[in-house]
Image 1 (cartoon, one colour):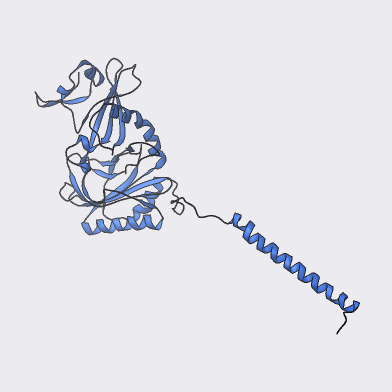
Image 2 (spheres, rainbow, N blue to C red):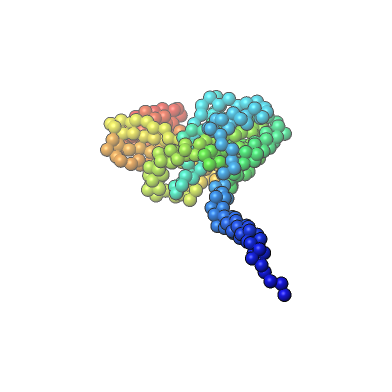
Length: 317
């Protein structure tokens, strides 16, 4: 039986020390990766817009995609939250409605930008495909929409067929795009359009439209659960009265169906009123005979109306 000499012991100690240090290092590395390192690993984001391209403004987005579109550009001579309107009263582009936070109604933005092109059906379809690819490539999120097809309006009198429609969004911008068959109208072609607005513009609009929504609900008229409120235009009547017109959508007020359920809401208040009072909704110009009491005549004094007895346009007085 071999005896372990003191010399053998002295030779073995450095190896034992080295093995001990190596084991300690491995334990430390393991502890780092299993206990410490995970806290530095970036967790997947729940934000659906995290991959979307950031554009400094809605206009910057439209400017980026516009050169890729073909056809005759529709010149918008006026722009608002509703969209852009040509000199002959047609919509060159129109912004999508959006529900802000916990609001009970949808709103249109205070301002929007966009562009529309008239062309034959093949070019219009290609433009729509180009827009769809643009939003997909820039990782925008497609929103659910019930307006993918059906009827729509380019003006109060011009009905068109919606061939395709979609809404896309990022964390701060909302856009819609549509392809419509406008051949029955004076435009005589198909139209492809894109419109965008900042979500901040929707938030600002919602705050201003809330009093009108409250008044509309308080009026007790028949309503649907899907209400849209948009542009506000204010005016002054007589003796401190004020009036306002508001773009609205509510299929319960219009017999032509959901896709044509827009109208203008008329509101008023006296100098001492804190809130607005809903008067009525109208498409076009209201008959002068509807202003049938002193309050309404003072509130809407000077507004255009239609004198059915004389067959002419007049003013409330």
